[in-house]
Amino acid sequence: MTSIVVHYQEIALKGRNRPWFISKLARQIRRATRDLDVEEVRSLMGRLEMVLRPGASWEAVRERLAHVFGIANFSRAGRTGANLDDLAAAIVTDLQGTETDTFRITARRADKRFPLTSPEIERQLGAHVQRAFGWKVDLERPSLTVHVEMLQEQAFYFFGKERGLGGLPSGVSGRVVCLLSGGIDSPVAAWRMMRRGCRVVLVHFHSVPFLAATSQEKVRDIAALLAKYQLHVRLHQVAFGDVQRRIVLETPPAPRVVLYRRMMMRIAEAIARQTRAGALVTGEVIGQVASQTLENLTTIDAVAGLPVLRPLVGMDKDEITAESQRLGTYPISIVPDQDCCQLFTPRHPATRTRREDLERLEAVLPVERLVEEAVNTAVVEEFEFPVIRSPV
Image (cartoon, rainbow, N blue to C red; front, side, top):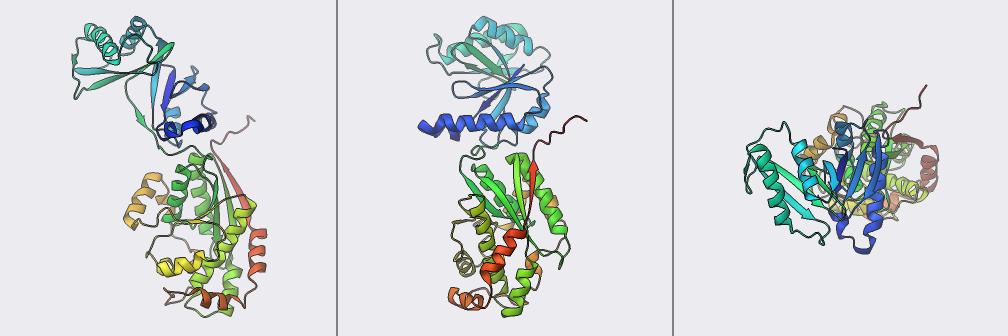
């Protein structure tokens, strides 16, 4: 078997824009497998075909495709002409050595001009397989299902399906900036936006040298992991300690956390403008911590000139933790560190701030200068996947 058949689902509903979405998915697959000896990725009547060279490893390609958004499922497949005798012979050959007692053939006609209906194709191919192996046909609960897809001049067959991530191909929904703390929530939020086709730029706020650099190392590891899905990730590391110190010197304790968050929003928005992003993303959840009450989220959002998206807003901690474990970020996120919001945190933070009160407190701060300095001194790091090293 020298082909992989890739099926998409949501993309098929895109009407006249469908060819553009398909081309984006094909491009993402090519980039994700560019070092794996894949000869070609092409569109064929409602599906994509990957043509493998002899040196391509199915296991390696399968692992890469499992990280590509936009794929509903994919299968290692054989390809023949649209002649049933040739197709049956190829299926029987590739089934040699297979151990099963029941089977069924499931056929689909992408080209409805094919002279036989799908049930007729199934019966004829099933008869070939039954004569060759003596297996019993079971249409309800077969041990083995042989999938057949008839196209205009060729046919594919495969013996199982690998589940894809679904969603939309990277980049079809524009660019967003995600505030990445290094905890459990925000990496999941970033991943969810990637799955909806957004190109995600990461922004991390740290308090080095006031706190240890552990959080910076964590977000680098998270960015590298997320690059397996997006293939390229840009991370802005923003020094936030001086901003916090100025807020502590000029304002009372209770509203400080919300003031921190308002400054983060301003800085993230400035970076979003630079990178032509259309929205901000956070991992905040209603009621999870003091700064995430509805009143505080409202006053935080008041300073943002772009939409603020919160893909986790209605989830609970157990749900987010389970998703981070599936994603693979959980072991990184739970490494102990000192989050910048822990610096100068008041004992009793305000849970119901008012916009006018915060604006009065911020009037004594050089807000524009602090934002400009934070953006200009941010360190930008790039993460690529796969990492292709030049021969020495």
